[in-house]
Amino acid sequence: MQVKDLATVEGFVAQTMENGEESINDAYTGDLLSDVMGNAPSESVLITIQAHKNTVAVASLAGIQAIVICNKRSTPPDMLQAAKEESVSVFTFEGTQFEASCKIACLLGKVDACKG
Image 1 (tube, rainbow, N blue to C red):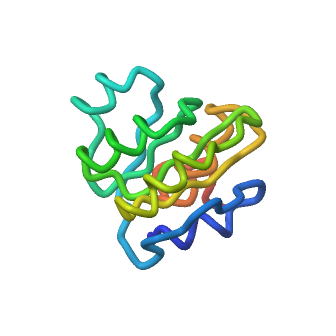
Image 2: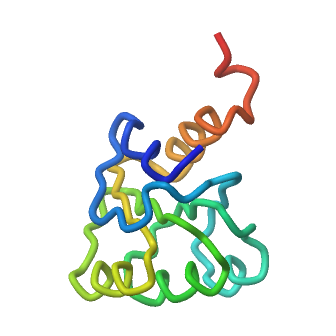
């Protein structure tokens, strides 16, 4: 899938989409940024509640293409500016990280229950 496909997920709102054509092959859910840095696969989407510019820095370092901020958290201007500078797309979602993870897993075709 591509980053722009995240904009088609019900409830996902693009805050900035800098790299819509980039590939996403996996996802990682986590809030401990050192864990994300060490374990998130590149060409993935990060699902988190960490809505600050350090999240963008970690995403950029790890090769993460997009971030989904969950639980009705807002994205501060400095985070969005950092995302634009690092070409990392940012989406918000009012639901939980679990719900976002399930939606993305279905979009990636990683869950049989989503097929049909």
